[in-house]
Length: 328
Image 1 (cartoon, rainbow, N blue to C red):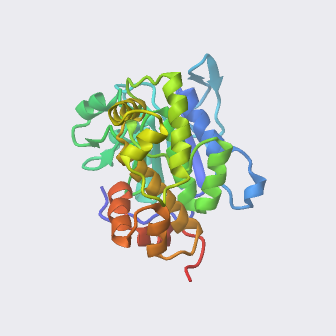
Image 2 (image 1 turned 120 degrees about the vertical axis):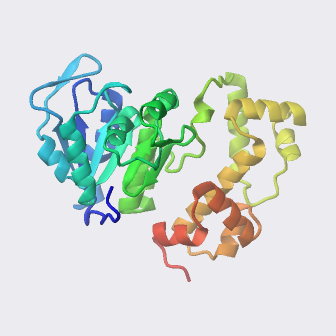
Image 3 (image 1 turned 30 degrees about the vertical axis):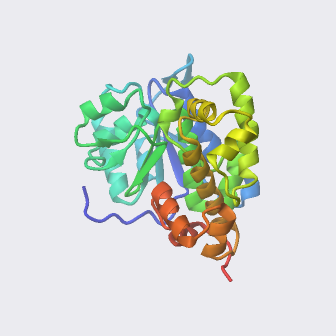
């Protein structure tokens, strides 16, 4: 593993790997975000190619075949290389593909995996000692096959030294929109998210999707409560106030809320406030104290604590990285 990696000067040339046994849904996600013509986004939008691991038509899940325009050479030349799943969590990875990805990363290319595609990145050795994720169903098997890799099954996606991994299939969209945000800023990422009917920031981890059925009646009730809370993030909202708004006793409210969301009312509210603070940091010129007040944290210290705890970055650093407005 190189000691220093120089990022590719232009990350907007994207290649997606096609392989025999191609995961159709994951492949489609990548095409949807990076491969569709988007003239309204201007001339600097992504340049996209599909690159096959070997010549000839390749079988895809669903009973059809794919024949790609590019091959390993074009794959390795791209600035962003996406692995949309893999044909099996225990399936071997060809040596030629491993060497192509190692060389591309050394030249500064970003490597991105969706769901089980992390197997391909782990086979390169580039994830050794680094944190990554995959679908929770595969996490234990991935860790057993690659013990030097730090598998985190509780997050939607990870990023380390130009290597990006996502959890289950839908989390691949979260990661793709995250890359758009890095390349084009929050306004464009928000627009892509809206077109996909996907929030540009999705809070939480994989645990919320595991064996947590939600009754339709309760889901409807909480949907109204969520809207009510989001409209009042700057106010003091206690658990008792939430329970009263939901027309439940405190004990029943907490139990049903946790069953429906996988988290406590307080944690959910904190997540929404962090999301609101992030939006203000990106799109307004408000000072940190005002952002803290508007998002419900009260003080800049409170904002900094929760923002760093949730996002791993300070509000100031976040604004410096993502904001598109000058702070007066």
